[in-house]
Length: 252
Image 1 (tube, rainbow, N blue to C red):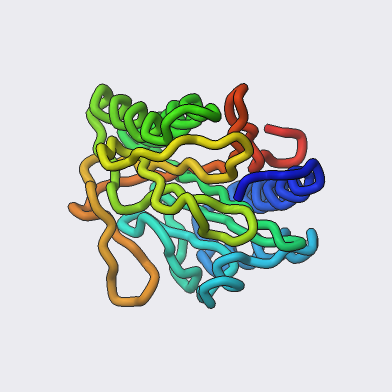
Image 2 (image 1 turned 45 degrees about the vertical axis):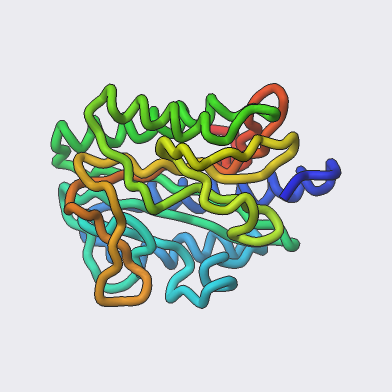
């Protein structure tokens, strides 16, 4: 969507903050011994107490309030009886709706004992997100985002998963502009419009270039199998850069 009023911006900031708060509370609860279902229930409680609804449940009948992906799973992991163990790499993706507006955020977390290459991957995954965010400015090509993230990945000897893209958001969870590449994409010719609402969410990996489905209808796995992280914000594009909507209470 393209924001047309201050009221729309305020409502988008509200749902963005709710999603960010849920992610923050869930990450603080992440420890060995907890199941992904228990973690999901924590996120559901944050959303419901704020008057929000899980977007994947609402829009796609996803079997959980949030997506929780562990190790070999890189996206759309279904919350269940899987027990989080020491050393696991966990991605939490939270998207929700309130008052007809949607937001989406995510982050990856490494549990102790930490492997140095995984810790570095997480640090660089956050850096890749900000490299992309720093390209956002109305009037500029959308392709700048993927070009910059791609250059960062090559420089630091990572790969990017090239079939999990950013997307427009606002009045629905996924809307135009669809399939926003966070990798170099010569076919991307669209421009960033003032007030455009979309996500930036690169998937940085130690070798994977694709996401493949598995035995269920949802969970995606790295191909070739390799540790992969995702960090995501929902933003509004302005002539002065991005306004980040998915910041928790206090803006941390």
